[in-house]
Image 1 (cartoon, rainbow, N blue to C red):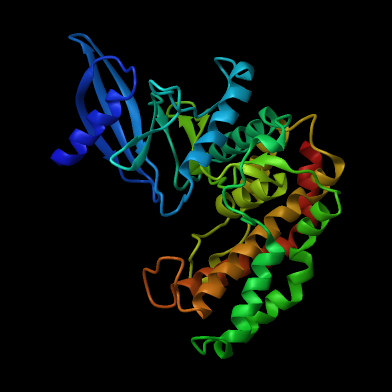
Image 2: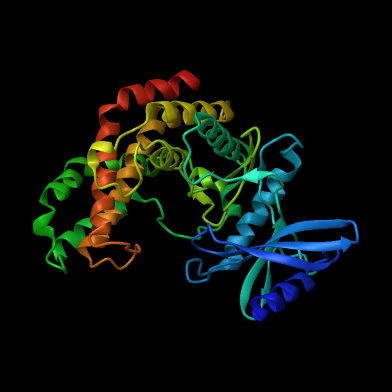
Length: 365
């Protein structure tokens, strides 16, 4: 057992008014960014309570205090609205100085309650998981639909500015630092063909035809804790990327992740496509929870968000391949090229199914 981490967890605990003393801890290894620990505190001989202690990755989040301020604003805004049987939004405990984070040995830490009998899915076949994820992310949008944007920091500028992402892609193509562009002419042609379409949402935002919303920006269904027995959504987690954005991007990124018939880096492209059953179940959950506040233009462009975000991610993967694989971690040669081709194929299948995607949104809107 790591003596240093035991001491650090105890120091973090000392900054909070937590009951009891630390009995045990385990590291949670399914996250890729922050260091997360499940900590068991013994209150008395017959009573124990579990918490989550998490160290924020400052390499990824350069200004953790701003990240935590955003989360604090979300907590303050939603807490009075959430009933006991509602899907919750993760909140972090205030320390003895009334901050929702604490600094120990130069590292930023935060503490929250452990959600009992919960499970998060990295892969799911059961369509109930898709409905629950859709409902949870839609409810998240609904609860925050009246939060003034000026209360939130933009923690990652232009995170989903597809126009700028594609500008950066074509700049890499023109520079071609690794002399790889000659081998991906067909893929480059795809982005040339759909560059204007992929810029549609940003264009509409700039014209004032789409409103900014409080968006999660990482809407994979493993960021929803669900009841292990009923699969009902319990809590939306991982709020580090929450900031002003477009509802269609949150909807679209969830679809890109949840409704692909293959894994994100599948090399056999015949396996890649849009799972319409999963698409419909997520859409049903999301639009049911979003009743009453989305504008007609948001509803009209919701399905387009899935295509746009898939094209955006594909361009980022291919740009990284052309630039020498500096951003996304590789697990095999040409991994980013495989990822890009997979996302391109998914986008192409979405384009073919676009009309029925829109009809599905309208049916549940």
